[in-house]
Length: 79
Image (tube, rainbow, N blue to C red; front, side, top):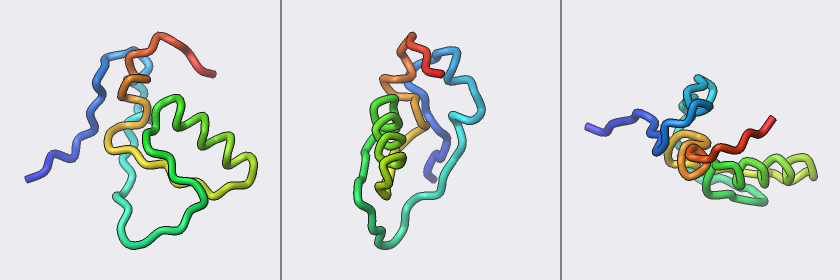
Protein backbone atom coordinates (compact mmCIF):
# COMPACT_ATOMS: atom_id res chain seq x y z
CA UNK A 1 0.00 0.00 0.00
CA UNK A 2 1.03 3.60 -0.50
CA UNK A 3 1.54 5.94 2.44
CA UNK A 4 -0.40 9.08 1.61
CA UNK A 5 0.76 11.07 4.64
CA UNK A 6 2.38 14.41 4.02
CA UNK A 7 6.02 14.66 5.00
CA UNK A 8 7.83 17.72 6.30
CA UNK A 9 11.59 17.35 6.16
CA UNK A 10 12.05 19.86 8.99
CA UNK A 11 10.27 20.39 12.30
CA UNK A 12 9.85 24.16 12.20
CA UNK A 13 7.22 25.72 14.44
CA UNK A 14 5.28 27.22 11.53
CA UNK A 15 4.96 23.84 9.78
CA UNK A 16 2.68 22.72 12.61
CA UNK A 17 -0.11 24.88 11.14
CA UNK A 18 -2.95 22.67 9.91
CA UNK A 19 -3.34 24.71 6.71
CA UNK A 20 0.14 23.59 5.59
CA UNK A 21 -1.00 19.97 5.70
CA UNK A 22 -4.08 20.28 3.50
CA UNK A 23 -4.21 17.38 1.04
CA UNK A 24 -5.09 18.15 -2.56
CA UNK A 25 -6.14 15.58 -5.15
CA UNK A 26 -3.58 14.25 -7.59
CA UNK A 27 -3.79 15.67 -11.08
CA UNK A 28 -5.31 13.29 -13.57
CA UNK A 29 -5.80 13.63 -17.29
CA UNK A 30 -4.60 16.46 -19.46
CA UNK A 31 -4.31 20.00 -18.16
CA UNK A 32 -3.73 23.30 -19.91
CA UNK A 33 -1.84 26.04 -18.13
CA UNK A 34 0.27 29.02 -19.06
CA UNK A 35 2.86 28.39 -16.34
CA UNK A 36 3.70 25.22 -14.42
CA UNK A 37 5.71 25.69 -11.23
CA UNK A 38 7.36 22.68 -9.66
CA UNK A 39 7.78 23.05 -5.92
CA UNK A 40 5.53 24.81 -3.42
CA UNK A 41 8.18 26.29 -1.17
CA UNK A 42 8.59 30.00 -0.61
CA UNK A 43 10.00 30.56 -4.10
CA UNK A 44 7.32 28.56 -5.92
CA UNK A 45 4.50 30.07 -3.88
CA UNK A 46 5.79 33.62 -4.26
CA UNK A 47 6.22 33.16 -8.00
CA UNK A 48 2.72 31.67 -8.34
CA UNK A 49 1.13 34.56 -6.43
CA UNK A 50 2.97 37.15 -8.52
CA UNK A 51 2.00 35.50 -11.81
CA UNK A 52 -1.65 35.00 -10.78
CA UNK A 53 -1.85 38.69 -9.83
CA UNK A 54 -0.57 39.49 -13.33
CA UNK A 55 -3.36 37.41 -14.89
CA UNK A 56 -1.54 34.17 -15.75
CA UNK A 57 -3.12 30.74 -15.33
CA UNK A 58 -0.70 28.93 -13.00
CA UNK A 59 -0.48 25.28 -12.00
CA UNK A 60 1.58 24.67 -8.86
CA UNK A 61 2.97 21.16 -8.44
CA UNK A 62 4.18 19.73 -5.11
CA UNK A 63 4.81 16.09 -4.22
CA UNK A 64 4.68 16.56 -0.45
CA UNK A 65 3.31 19.17 1.93
CA UNK A 66 3.35 22.82 0.90
CA UNK A 67 6.34 24.65 2.35
CA UNK A 68 7.79 21.58 4.03
CA UNK A 69 10.99 21.02 2.03
CA UNK A 70 13.94 23.37 2.37
CA UNK A 71 11.54 26.22 3.13
CA UNK A 72 10.35 24.30 6.19
CA UNK A 73 13.82 24.59 7.70
CA UNK A 74 13.96 28.35 7.22
CA UNK A 75 13.80 30.68 10.16
CA UNK A 76 12.39 33.45 7.94
CA UNK A 77 8.88 34.66 8.56
CA UNK A 78 6.51 35.75 5.82
CA UNK A 79 3.33 37.64 6.65
